[in-house]
Image (tube, rainbow, N blue to C red; front, side, top):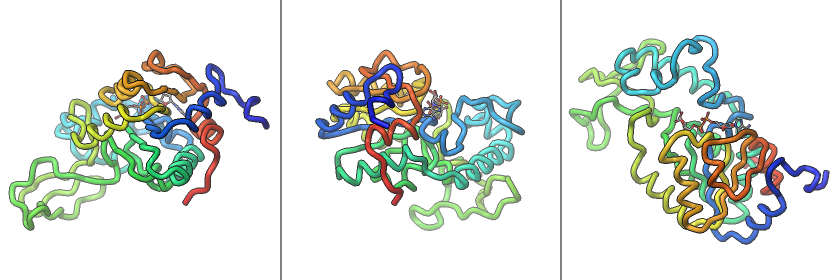
Length: 262
Ligand code: APR
């Protein structure tokens, strides 16, 4: 099917493809919609099953964890299993293939805590909200056993957070929770990529959470063309030059050319 017949509503793929060809630096800001077609529910989807009666912000917060470490940790264990079962979709693969064809020209900045960009072979992914597959200590370690290697986690019961064998410090998921600051170095790299790009693709984010959502405005103010790829309206549509209505796994291969997973 010719490209023109696959135009998504609200924007011109051909015009964006031309802008892509002219751009020396492309920044890509991704959100949960990027992984939706890999089977990972978006954050603001209704929580399913056991979690349907919980407010995600109560689970994804330090207060929620301190109130009930086992419940919150079990929610993350279940989400981790979902991430491990998931595969990168055609959108992840197309981004990584384009980056391989244009070394040093694409920076992916993700709000997602899964590892699908990385598993698709995307180089240099900037993680704004952490890594759901990793743990970190709840409290700063009070007695590093070996410089840089804090407490040794003791085995935990099923679904319980690991504890330090000596000081009962708890392990928690290495993700940024509501009310917590983003990792400074990652945010600085993301802001630099937003300022230095000529084109920013904003894929699969509601634009509801700052400072991540503000990166699109930073790119626009620095003179970049901002293109939103989303099947629905988002809170930052007003910042975009182009709104491509469609899903990540359909639009990105059309825009970037397909690609083969590495
Ligand atoms: N392709 C592209 N976009 C999609 C798809 C898809 N297949 N399916 C859904 N979307 C869009 C939705 O229309 C919505 O705009 O993805 C967006 C998902 O929005 P959220 O669930 O709010 O996820 P996100 O924007 O990533 O949330 C930002 O908020 O909850 C915190 O830390 C969490 O990183 C997350 C941040």
